[in-house]
Length: 583
Image (cartoon, rainbow, N blue to C red; front, side):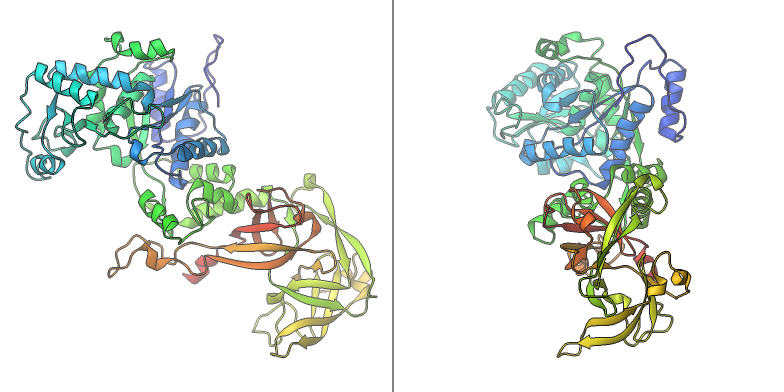
């Protein structure tokens, strides 16, 4: 993450990406409105980040980086009842995993004293009042989309009474919910968010950073806008649901001009925090929504608490912790964000866009390995029992810089069960009784007979390896219809292989269909665990190392459970979109 240029050289801006937000930034720089760009990524630490946040992270940090500016990571921690240090740590880890770093780590709670002084200033200006209405009464007085609201009977309290009550709220004299501080804007406004919104509420809950110092907490919109102004944010980027709240954001910024009232910042200067007060501009963009997923924090929490998934980092979850464990890479997510682009139009994107970005990324970056997911024994009867050799294989067929590895080859092999059919369907091009198939890199084999168990299941294939078809021999180019992969039974390492798939069976699990909920659409095949075999080089993988298991898909060594001598691999994505075939 780039920071300010300490020299006098002009910033070198990246003009290769084009969207309406970047054009606004370019215009603001060109006209001299801003000499430097300041952004921020402001998550609430009340849950784990999900795929949708990846877009915001790439925008907030990416735009600052592209234009030689700065981006802060700021936790909007104004609701301590729902916040947890566990989420704070995970969010920092996720941002760094995506490849970004922050210019400064901030918290809304850093500014609580400044928020309070700003609220007192609003009261003295006649722009805020203490209201005794209950939450239900406030909703009743607010009106509807077609009917104006009504003024609270406490709206015309005098300045001194309001100041006294607000100071007593801070002193903890009143019970939770007994009073609120509300902005005095316009109860008849067509924009309901401007109908005297709450600025402060009483909530006697300890805060993770400030302890029990505050029995009152600022509301999100007030704290968010004030924080942006305090930090000198030039562009406040947020999703479209904040568009209706932009007038309230601007009101909160404009009513307390920090540049004109430096005394409000004294608590921060006393604490040694750097300040760059400015008037930020809020710009909204569309959320990132995919089908076959739910993104609501409430619903994700329910999935975890009800045991429908195996925790927040379950590889089927859309959390960044989950998809990281699934095998998604930072570069794949950034590629996806670039492909989706930035617009003002909300839409439900097909999950194949996300999966396609991962395939394209891993196709170029992932070494190849041999693995058999559902094994069937093959015995090459014309090789001696102690036969053993090693064969050379490229680590990547499209990139010589990946080098080569040696794979052991012996008389007994494991092949994929689906690569054999005793009664082959029409068009089957793999192994059948009396048929030939090429063993990848080893030669051509013919299946002579099958061995079955007492239940009639095929448990072993007895085959003959054509000695003239070995690599380098004259018959190596003999044409056969199919090629299959294998691992040496003597040398292969048993591995736990987790076959993950989409969590839901329908594109829109949020839809209300005859009283069903998203819980009713959980895909029972979304996780299947088998014991397979991998070549020795795959078993030596480090956690989070990705491979293409040839002919099977892309897999990653599990970041928690994989260990030397006990390999565990998660399927990240299949080689092709199998769901498109079902549609």
